[in-house]
Image 1 (spheres, helix red, strand yellow):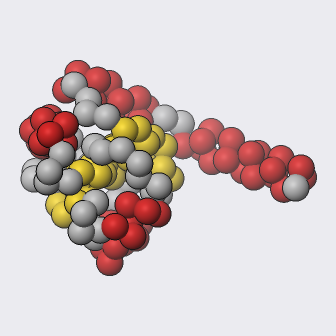
Image 2: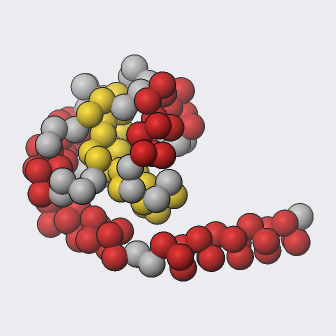
Length: 126
């Protein structure tokens, strides 16, 4: 399945309506982005249970700013509306596959519990 173009207008609904969303922040002038694009597309064909989306940082500057994108390409992965992975740099196919498998294997109840603990501890310190 081809990656869809994600915009500020479609971002929230895409995250809310899908359990697993991988986002490639890129720009047309970026050489590493062009090298990562076929790796990202190939992964999308192997993982029909996930949405693969691309954000053109030149066009969607506000969305890129929301994620504090400093370097492209940057990959962000949402699972059940929680950003569980974000990392700049073009990935090799095997490394991307390993990350996807780790994200799919996450215990999301544990992730939510850890977030709640962190928020509770942060509120107590503040």
